[in-house]
Length: 483
Image 1 (cartoon, one colour):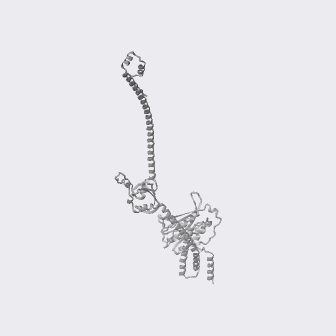
Image 2 (tube, one colour):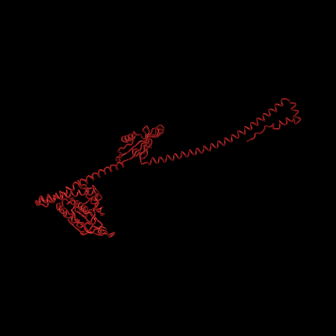
């Protein structure tokens, strides 16, 4: 603490000297002055006490000033820490806002914040795409009186979009909207109201559900196709038995002694019945997808049977039938009836594309794969018809594909399925000169060891498949003819 200086002419010894009477001159002077001298001494003492009080007060003030400075320094440090924390909080809020903005901008759904006055206050890129609002409309909007951007209004949207958003206020809504020049898309919208602090604004969540709708439609279509397939299989089974009876009676009429004209009519009838039987079998094979009942099959006998079965059909179509059979005695583990169906489908397709005549060739041979040296059998059905357009080569084995009006487009699809079930391959090609050729290949590496003897020839379903009632009918008809 700073000490104050004593006033000149006044010292702490003055009262002592006055009390002891030291100094003759002083004593004489004091005695000579009388009452006035006493007042001077009291004034000096009061002045001394005042200085002492002032000094003590000054020391107290100095101490309090030091404490105040320390308190101010502490408050300054706390203020700086608070300011630093506030700056960090502001930076964190800014960073969080930028992060949320990036999330909002990258959301796969549209987000639109709409005020109670109908102004779109916020709209992310997906929302702009779904609502058809251009980016420059939101950025280059005119300024209102308060300097805030006057954003896009709901009233400026297309009527169908406004109706969709209004429907979203009542709950989640879905609607198909036109988005020229793009195709129409399905949109869903739902509303989420903001708290009161949001000024009555609402958030609309928009989603493009076109893909989901497409999948739902495909699923519905698949269910319908499955129901139709089941119904087709039932109808095919119901048609198959009476069809066998019709073929039986047509065969009996062909064996009867009738005139040439009647025999020609019967031949046309048999041709139609066999074609119908092949179609029924295609439906059963495609929709029923039966697993092959494998047994040893002589592929040479299979080709001979196909040639004999197709011979009358080829004659009526003025088609020359050629057989080059190099598979006699070659055994293959397969389902004979399904393999017959493959040969019939390919051959009947060839006959249909040659209504004015031509040449149909059935050939078979064995060879070895040059890559591994394993044996395989090749069956080829070729014709001299118009051939296969190059653009159709990749589609011909798909179900439902057909270039002939009224055809179900199952023949080649059934062939492909049967061949694949037997572990083989089938391919169509355009011949260099004219017509088309279909090649079927089966590996003989394992089948040749499994087959001990060929499967005996059995009647084909489209030719003589019938139940016991049909057999009884045949016996009855034969007895009637004999009598």
